[in-house]
Image (cartoon, rainbow, N blue to C red; front, side, top):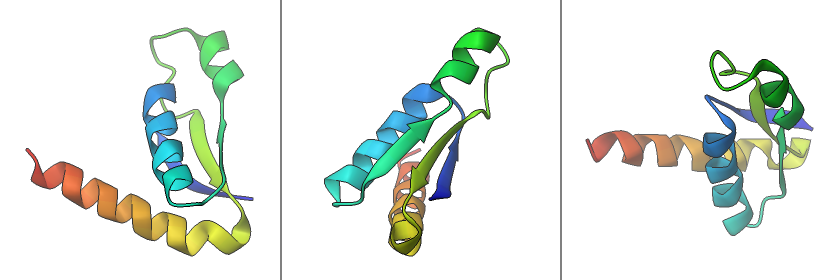
Length: 74
């Protein structure tokens, strides 16, 4: 498995994982326990979205498209 996305927090990680799953890419969110151990403040950067090696290229393309569209809305 490879890291497809490094999220700011657990909520963002689950949004990205949901996007990937909606596009038939199995995604795993890691870092749940690390964030809880650190508390709410300063816990950013410990949550990652992992995908299978063979899905990484497509996952990154979907994430980049999501990020581009998200930034255009502002």
